Image (cartoon, rainbow, N blue to C red; front, side):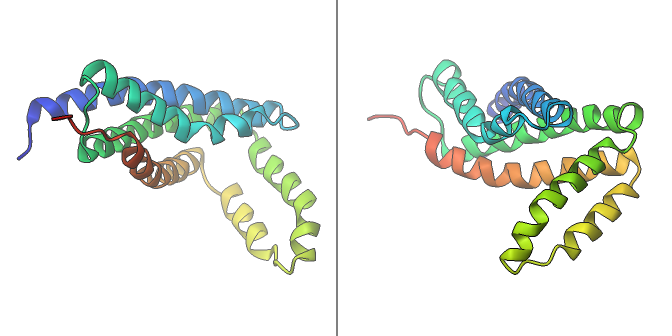
Length: 173
């Protein structure tokens, strides 16, 4: 049975934590664009699952007295990623529309040129990666933002599954 008040509560906390996650992603994105030599941007992205799990545990502890079902934990994670993806898509659209001037695709192209010989050494063809970059460079800012938003939602559903498996707690009898 669907409890509407529980759903409203999950969505309210997920909106707040989604906004925090969007800030984390924005910081990571900007660090990767403006300081590509720094590993901090990549480190922040890798921290995403741990951040969501930490916020799930805080939600479980502070709002639910330490008890959360797997379904509610999974819904919380999915909603958190959905809201974060929506907000981050707005940030990315604004960046691609007003600040980028091709810098993002050029950064990816430069990275592929560096990694390309390693791929070739291991027998991996880079033609598909170059083709993908060609497609990406031809996209409008809204298409790029939408593509990344859908990718974030898709990956977020898997991260939410694992966060829910770890974060779910039953009531002690």
